[in-house]
Image (tube, rainbow, N blue to C red):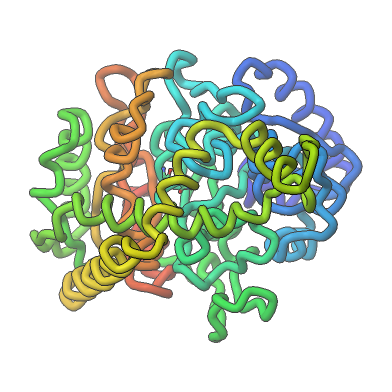
Length: 447
Ligand code: GLN
């Protein structure tokens, strides 16, 4: 598959021919169920878009039955920005319902398969985006990351996935899961393409009140893979990781050392705090955000004898099991009597997590961390919800602290599946993140 950088150099005729070829390839890999829709009417470089990002005139369902039949009335800001760069939204990527999940098994369109082993999940919730890029049926894709949903599928499929600093990319037109955590970001074949796509979608947007108003310097034009950095490593954090992840981590640390980076051993707060704070915060925000899906305003309606019955029937039939579980949990932690004990406490813990990162960043430019405790799970193996929540232990603190992070493939485990690790940077220091990631990618190629 051509890279985004290469695609940007193609003529209009070449792009047309490429789109035809891409269609054939997508058809050949239909069994992956990575694409859930296609639009051939646009002109420009075809890109794959997760099903929770609005593209005018396209269906947008966030993988949920409740939104079926709903057509986006406007473009998300990221889509407007892409169009201005000669990119045309082309495919719809499958995802976990409302981006809640880590496996892309909960979509109303059925599960997505991992192209590297069809018995494994591609990760989630941006599993369709990651599987398509890894299978060579998308140049690149957009996903969203609330607690790891770009980085973890990227790691499971052996590609690059990047979550920008909170506030860097507009969320206008992104179906909200947990508004204080959600960010849109790129899933690509390599680090440079991730930087290019990240530049295209970034910047202040008055339509998103959490978007940060500051000057934007494009990172892709200033990439410097030779920079020597101070990189923090987290030996204790690896206790819960598989042997394959530990081995890949150690190997990567050795590579970073030979590159001439300074390695600093440190620790972060125990991940059990991250998981508790995340699942209280995310479900609380989700229960509020999902209140708008009542069968009246959007998507499908199941009519009852009165308004309340219509709400109840529409929501009972429209939402899947995991989404309902989270709405219940979220309403519980926000209810009077429990609000202080759970929600307020989670916000205090969140503050401590943020400060913990700030402490590490006083002496380090980047942190090297696992993305997931193991390589891609076998399909059906994460049915226990608690076990699924625990599997997010390495990704969610980054969202709680609002930091940028990039997951890149560093090794192939003995089971033949890729291992991805993430680099984490200070807020708004994407330049250092991409410099470090590109340097590491180059060094790994030389090995
Ligand atoms: N797996 C996490 C969750 O289910 C993260 C999902 C995401 O980033 N959208 O909440």
